Each structure stands twice: as structure tokens, then as C-alpha cells.
Length: 556
Image (cartoon, rainbow, N blue to C red; front, side, top):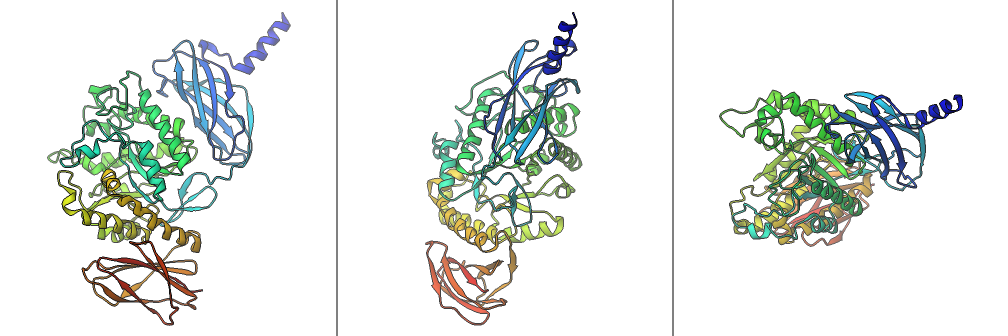
């Protein structure tokens, strides 16, 4: 009898038999050789009763880890399959940020209380040669775990083509099936981009929508989270990983409406309803559990243009206080459950909400600028001065109105696309301004221009390893637009001639030290030519009509 009791006790310790049949039955490390900053997967089987396995107030599984350095981490896990009361499959996706031995166990909670814990186990993490996750460093750059600096260069790829597009003049273009991630992301990478922004909404990656997608890419489902959307998000992150692309994922409010299974009858109620807040926190937990492992999450973005949500009913706008309070609560919560501390942001169109830019858990602030691209440098400088954190222009273009025919002013659209990138490169922002109208610029091949900007960005990093210092530049001709930065021993001067006549421009620089070399990069052709080394603080450049160039001076 004693022997039987002993074996029963050992079994209980190993697999955690608990009252009420809340059992962690087994777990398995799926990834044979864990490597630094790479996904390590685990399968966990358990038995429990639940109403909804996606709601942590009902049931939740966490992976409890101790890092080689002694730090405790709590990683949310996610439900994969199975029925209440029967054995179910759950998964953990973890990307280690330290080399060496990790110790871990799984804890299962019901109604907020831990009711089961697995036996302890361990795994060892080997080096990978990868750089890790992005974090804030300065107004100019983000930095990886490795310390390597990063600046995002890319564009909006807001969504894959829809079944029925509402563009007046470009409906056929924007409905082309080719505009999916499998085409657009490799194209962006081939053009030198490393960053993009995309939405989760009713017709794109519709995680919590069940039907009526305005897209042929998703299947109707009554599942709490749509399986076809989950599969598409998985594939998108796999593409990002293979292509070296980072994504600002616009999470949006989700499907919060009462008519669709949510708790709020209106957007105003969404920001204050405790049930809607709890639903959103569960949504955030799922994002972290399933996709938080990815180093290619450039940022979690709560809202696209939340001020437009606020003023959707102009006669009865939503309280700014409730929106800001919601963002404060959700950003703090997301920080608390994300063991990787991904960057967090939200965006406005053009109306600031008092207190939003001051929220400490928002890592950078963001707005969108249309029909005023020349204002980008001043906007970035002002917001960073006022709020002491990085500022990003998440959308820009010459025109926002999709009822207009862009071909009527196509040269202006192209020029504005290019100008926004250069203004961003020479401004203290860690993500260069991202253009809208991705199908239009792909069709015109304008987006190939990203290579030009990327080339100079690479030179800046090579010279200064992420160090930037603004340099004052005074052009001899009125109307010439100039910006300058110093990176290490090299100074980069951007000059743009917006006039219709060629200009011979003298650029006055306050440089110190001996000038070793000078070269001029023609932004349109991509050709660099060496210049004679001049003494003194002035340098002559010739700018063609509506032409631009980058002067690069090595003054060691």
C-alpha cells in the first residue's frame, strides 16, 4: 500500500494532478536546438473545463522562465485546439534574449488563480548571430538588443487588395489580386526597404471578424478568432523573417460592436466599458502569446488616426480624456505582459489629444501629414522638443483624396514621395516618413527610389554607427531647401532646388577640421562623383531644375 502511495505521489509531482480535473498532462520542447533571438516552440497538453479558452478571466496558461542571468519572465501561452473537459493542445512561442541555460515550468490558471503547475525543466540557448528586438535609443535611431542601430525605411502597405475597392479612378488597379503580401513584401525588400506598416481590420487580417470581409482571402468562421486570419498573420511574419522586414502592426479596436458579439454599442462606449477593455486586453495577450516572439514586430500600434475616431460624429465628439486614459491603461498593460518590450505607439491624423503625447508607455508619438510634406522636418523637431521622445510621420503624400485622379498630377505625386523620404532621413526620426498609395507607386515604379535613400542611410551608419548631429547649412540662393547632419567624421548635406531653373548654389557650412574628401550624390540618377577638395566653409554645387543632391564631406 505504501509503495502504491509513493508512486502516486511521484506522478502527482511530475504532472500536477489537481482538484477539479485541472491538469497539465504533458509538455514537449518542439524546437530541438534553441538559438538566440529565434523562435523556440513548446506543445502543452492539459485538461480543463472552460467557457472560452481565449479569455484569461476564464482560463490561462503561462510559461514561467528564469533566464541565465537570473531574471524571471512570464510568457503568455495560447490555446490551439481541443474541447472543454477533454485534453486540449496549447502552445508557447519564446525567443530567448540571453545565451545559456533557461529553467522553466508551466502554470495553468482558472478564474485568475493558479490551479496547476508542471514539473520544472530546462533548455540551453546557443548563439545565432542575429541582433534581436528593437528598442528606443534616441530620437534618430532605434537599437537592437545587440546594440546595433536601426532606422526604418519603407512605406505603408496598409492592406492586401480588396474584393471591391472604393477608389474612383484606380479601382481596377487596387483590386488586382497580385497586391498581396507575397508580392508586396518581397518587392519592398528588393527596393531596399526594411520597414512597413499594415492594418488589422474588417477586410485585412480580420482576426476577430467572422464574415463579410470584402476580401476573397478569408473564410467565414464562428471561431472566436478567425483561423484564416491567424494563418495569414503567421505567414506574414514568416515572410518578414525571411526578408528582413520590420512591421508596425496597426491593431485597431477589433470587432467590439454589440451586433458582432462585442460589448459596446458605440466607439465612445468602447473606450470606457470595462467588458470591452477586458476583451481588448485578452486580444493583446493573444498577440503577445502568438506573435510576440517575432523580432520583426517593429511596433505595436493601437489605432490608426484615433482623432478621426474621436470626431467621427462631429456634433458629439468622444471625450479626449477617455481616449487618452484608455491608451494609458492599454499601453501599460501591454508593457506588463510583453517579455520582449516591443515598441508601442498610436497615431493621429492632425488633431492632438491633450495628454496623449506624454503617456510614458508609448515609446514614440506619431501623426500623419498630407498635402504639406515640406512641414515634416519642423513637425518632427517641434514634437520632440515638446515631449522629449521620438516622433514618426506614419503616413504622408501629396494628396489624400482618393476621389481624385492622381495621374492629373503624377509628377507632383512622385516628387512628393521622394521629398518625404529625404526630409525624414535628415530629421531626427527613427522611422522615415512612410508614403501612402502603395499600389499607385508600385505601378509607376516610384517605390524603386527607396534604394537611393537607403544608400545614403547606409553611408551615414557606416560613418557614425548611429550617431547623428544636426548641422546648419546656409544656401546662397533663396528658395533652395537644405538640411545637414554630421555622422562621425562625415557631414551629409541635402540640397533641393524646387524651381524650374538650374541653380549654381554655394552652401555655407560651419565645419571644423581638415577636409579630406568630398563627393556629390545625384539623388535622381543615383550617381556619385568625387569633387575637388576645397578649403574654407563654402562649397559649390549645381542643382538642376527640381533637382536634388547630397554633398558628402569627410572632414577628419
